[in-house]
Length: 438
Image (cartoon, rainbow, N blue to C red; front, top):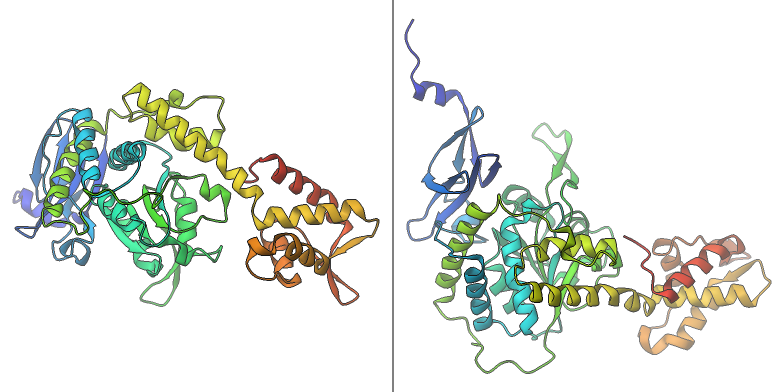
């Protein structure tokens, strides 16, 4: 019987294009050399020695790199490293990242350090079960886009999209590359609470919560598919999200509150891409050598703080070695988190709940007409609302955002007396600053 060669055996094994693979004794990462227009796999064994290979045989399959002609790779839509470069110590790497950001972005000194550590977090995020999101928030021309470009150029397998992008390529790219989503002008898509992008943000902060979408196969059969959306996300937007639970996932820098630093270049120099690539190469080395050593420090945030805050803050703080800086960042995150209920208390939902509660308190009627609530909102908060509220709008907010039932009586929509206790509870929670959703 003739002997079977290794090549013959390998030819029958499945060849799987791969971007990243984490195994107990091996870490595999895709790299792309833009000069040679070539892709390869970096294989690191036991967190030490690494090699660059075109094939990696593992557990009955052969891993191969994505083709360099892949549109996302060829056009550098996904920011990949080209090879590992020694990163030195973690402190040295963080200092280099901070220096890069300082050259090109005008943000507060503390956020500069937060962003540098968030970039580190993005390269080892899969060592944690939760991740926060990073956000630059401000008006047009305040430097948000430049910040996204600089931070995103260093983040782990970052790919850039705008709020006007269709969702399908975002889902597929996130699922295939499991990298960092960098989204500009996020406000555009988030007016609809059922938006697919909202689902990405709601599910993407916790490991193990894929988004299910129905895909039609070649036989025109509908086949539900789970898309992985867990991972770091960097967002630029002008306003805030209406959902406070979603808001609590963000670490935010408010941009444009001062004049631009005179040393910030208006146009990015030709050296920007090369500088970013060199740092990505060092960050790749950081991932290869440090990914297996990263552990969550549950004591990184004060245990007296809210569970959601501790959950979101701990992964980032676990990568901050300087204890004084860790305390400073923890205080900033706590301040941002604790400001959310205060903003919620000024929301239109809080205004409506308060007026409705007052109406129930001051009347013995069995219902409160929505028309009266709308009139009171316009009378008290018309300048803040910006446009006249109608009973239809008020009813929609009560039903969809506050889960308050309405009914029709005598040709008019009303809130029945049966909702009084729920209205009272909501009004008190808004007033006390408690968060209603987690």
